[in-house]
Image (tube, rainbow, N blue to C red; front, side, top):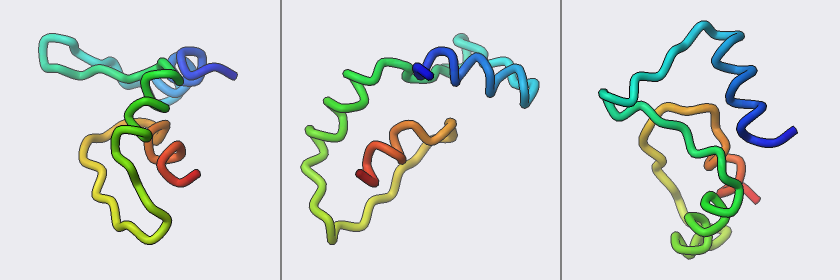
Length: 64
């Protein structure tokens, strides 16, 4: 399932409604997430603090 469909499903399931005026956005582009992981240059023994609530798409990509 792609990230947009997963996000739509999770928003409906949780009853959350993001407000763009408050800067509430979700990254649903797997290419962008991959670029973020590459830019972070994470090694297997690095400790990472990811700030910002979301559905864990970036977290999962960082764990790979």
